[in-house]
Image 1 (cartoon, rainbow, N blue to C red):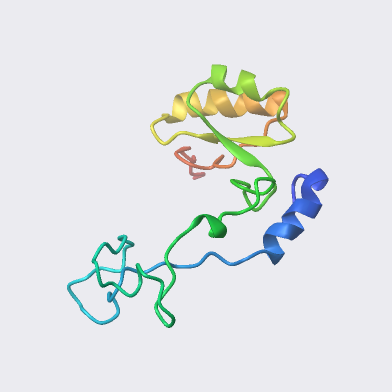
Image 2: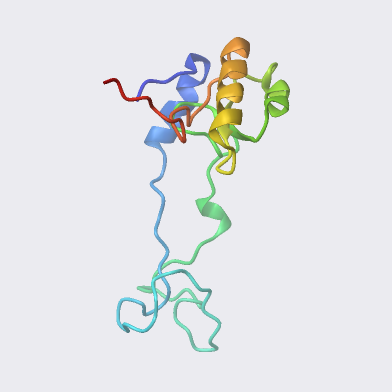
Length: 139
């Protein structure tokens, strides 16, 4: 994927080189079928995982957090702001080199077209341009 924001290319390199996101699984979900894999904190008094014994899987902690410089960054180097109307784009005018817009799910196609036109005028990147737009078929 091309980096849209070249001023953040060093930061993007940090993201790509950084730690991969670890999948934390619920204790003994690999042994017992009725226990789902989705994370639950172990609370038992004798639980090996909670007591951090050797050989037991890791629990989520603050050490797995990304550095603040790259936290919430998308792969293209921008942070996203959810937009529901044309007025929401006005907040992004001065920040369009750091933030991009994502049109909310509940926005219909009529208002979506208005938002896309205004975003193009202001030079704001919109992530989900193609969503919910009715394409005319040529006959």
